[in-house]
Image (tube, rainbow, N blue to C red):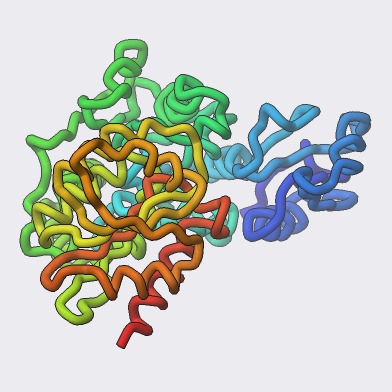
Amino acid sequence: MKFELPEFKGKSIIFIGRGREAVSFEKFIKTYAAPSSFLSVFLQDDQASYDSIRSIDVTKTVIVKTAGWPGRLVPNAYTTPTKVFFDCVSQLGAEVIGVTGTKGKTTTTLLLGEMLKTTGRDVRVCGNMGVPMLDMLEGATAQTLFVIELSSYQLADLEVSPHTAIVTNLYNDHVDYHGSIEAYWDAKRNIMRYMSEQDTLIYNPDFAASDWVKQSACKTITVGAKQAVDISGAKLIGEHNGINAAMAMAAAKLQGVSEQACLSVIQNFEPVPHRLQIVAVKNHVTYIDDAIGVNPDATIAGITTVVKEIGPIGCLFIGGQDRNYDYWPLMQLVSRLAIPYIVLFSEAGAKFKTLIPSGYNAEFFETNDMEQAVEWAASKCPSGSVCLLSTAAPSYSIWKDFEEKGDLFQKAVLDLP
């Protein structure tokens, strides 16, 4: 199918951002819109490009920004690859299921995709987990079913909602990008803000999404702890994953997938890397990679799950970029569990250390070197305990992203004797 994108035809395109999304958009727009030129810029290190955007001729130029660059920092009108994707899907007449939330969205998206594929339909899973949406449009038809993981960054500028939406949960996160927690949640709300009475929202009633439905005509399905799927025989662990699985199942059933087929997918599902992933057991110590745990709520959930389902934590890796999170509840949990050894990554690690309550006598090791951290933990962890990487802070001040952090942890663990 040829997509109609007249706003780009013959125009100069300035793409703010680099990497996978920039490459994807350039390929797509040159295929379907024949722009006169394409320029990718990275405003963070290119003040001249930033200044030039202020004075562009908007009749001849279109600005497109990557999801990773806040819209409030763009000095002119712009569009996004996400908006272009939804425009093209509308032209196809295809159906979209969107998944968002502070935590659990990748696992829920991939679970749902596998459930839907049991029907034999053309199911395409893409979005925030690293597969650009525009890449998935090639050869798609009105019968294609798109399952998309949507971050708050992608949702912030969206003015259309998917036909079915899942909101896994809402915690405090990404305030540095959006400007406030209210703006972060408001961006998430776009996944259902424009729904009609034919559309369906699946959400956990324990979170703020409950307030959104009062102003919407959409149908709703609530999935909380009481509806969690029993995953005791699966490779997934934790009550949160039982809820994620239940949400995926609820969406799959709307598409005609049987409960038996859903349960079979859950039992055979391979956990997503860096999400409470057991890396290895070395010298009677279990090493777990929860690199996705980049805020205190996520780390609290990870610690709680590990202690309940695997064993006591002998060493916790914590710290990274400081986003002014409230670490006191996490510190209380860590001291209550008497976790004996803590690796601290700056800058948030130093802040965490200032909250040590009296009577808690853990031994701390401060470093930004993952290999040194793992070697120290290996020399200290009691036999039968868990060494857990769940930093309660983002990685960007030390590593490129949480994947790099988790990969370095896994390599260092696997290199242990």
